[in-house]
Structure formats: structure tokens, C-alpha cells
Length: 332
Image (cartoon, rainbow, N blue to C red; front, side, top):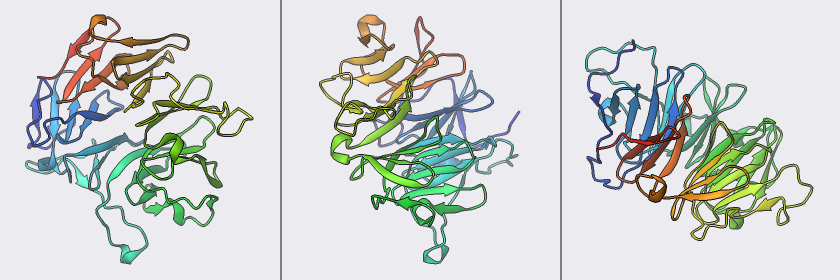
């Protein structure tokens, strides 16, 4: 049984926001190899759920900030946490002495400015098939080999065809063919690295802020955006961008905003919709509402766990689990 820092608090429910961020919500989630689920919030730090109890980690436990942007479990079982101001790591195999911090802060150090570290928001993380961990940050994209960090664009072997900066990257995704996709918050839209060349695939004006990237059954890329709904790109299409290869707002939602998109094991797609919860099973689109049993109409899909349950969050640290029949509320 792993030991945790004694400062971390435990409860059977997710607590309502205790700090100044009264609309704090859970946005980043990962289930680790042991089955624990880690929930990152934008103001209330992290909760770890072991199937019975939630353990709450904050700056008191070593996090550099309670505003959490991203969480990743690497192949060695370490938990990485990206926050508004930096990078943190939790090592499950470590033994903690009384009062010792659970998380250690990991400065992103590169070979410039005399190796000085700096405050750098870490928006997203991804470990590729080769084991390299990619970090999308305010200052650019960085890679971690397991020993040291490098700035991706400092690699002389990368042909940066469109002179991209890759700053404020909100999502990084590796597709089935091994290509790496980057979704930006602003300026650069969607870009792709094929192992040699970095290319801007979709310009900023066509997608604007890209919150999440996933791949559907057919190998098409889906992008959850803030202003153009869920967009689709068909890599197999011979048509150029502007034709059928790229389609904005594929579900034709009025508001156009999608904060997240989730594909379950059956290939069904879940996303937040302006009137409730969007659900698409490949042929039929449906908006689920309170009339269909939802706890409320403002749920965000965040995770499908190993048992096939779908987890949802809502503003105010709301947390719900759907087992295919009913919703269980895990928040106060």
C-alpha cells in the first residue's frame, strides 16, 4: 500500500470550492495503472479517488499552483501535473516521511539563458509510443527524454515549414500512424509533425482555440474548439483544406463551443452541448438533458474508466459517474 503525505486530506465526496474560485471545475483526468483516478481542477488542486475515498492534494502537498491544466501518467507510473505556473511530479513508489510533500516541482530547464528555469504554464502533456513526453506550454513545446528537457523547435532536424512558434499549445495528440498533432489556443490553429516536417494543417481562423484532439473509428481527427464546435479533418481525403477534407462544427450546434470531446470504447462520442450533453453513436446525434436523467444540463465528459463508466464534471466541483443506467453524484 503506497504511503501519502500526511498533509493530504481525505473524504468520501469532492468538496465544494473552498478558495476564491467559486466556479472551479474538474477539467483534467487520468486513471493510473492501479485503477486510481486523478482529477485536476482549475482552482482546487487535485483529487485522487481509489474507489472508496478521495485524497485531496494542494499547494500544501507540494503543488506549485492549485490551478491544474493537465495530468499524465507516464509508462513508469509517475503522475505528472501541469499547472498555471509549472510542472510537478508524484512518484507512487516513493516512501514519504511524516510531513513530507507528496509532489515535487520539476523546473523545465533547457540549454539557454544559463539553464535558468522560469514560470511556464503547462497546458497539456502526452507520452508518445517511443516514450518521449511532450509538454505544451506558454513558452513553446518541450520534450522530456527521461533524463533532460529539450525545446522541440530547437531540434535542427525538424523542418519547420511554416515557421511556427507552437506557443500556448492546448492539446497534443499522437495518431495511429505516429504523427504528432498540435492544437493551439491562438494564432496557429492546428499543426502536424510527421517525424521530419512540421506543417500548419488548419489555419487559426478556421478553428481558433483548440481544446482537445481525438481520432474516430475511421482515422479522422476530431477537434473540440471554442468557437467552431467540433471540427473534423479527414487525412485520407485527397481534397485540400477548404474542401471536404476539413469540416467545421460537424454537429451544427448553435453556440459552437465545445470544451471537451470523449470517445468511449464502443466509439460513441460524448461532448458538452449548449442544451445538455451531446451524444453521437456514428449515425444518430442526440442531446441528453435532465429529462433523460442527467443531474443537470451543464455536464462535461472527462473520462471513461477501465470498467466502462463515463465520468462527467460541472462548475462548482460537480462530479458524476454514469454506469449506463444511472448517475452517481460524488460531489457535496
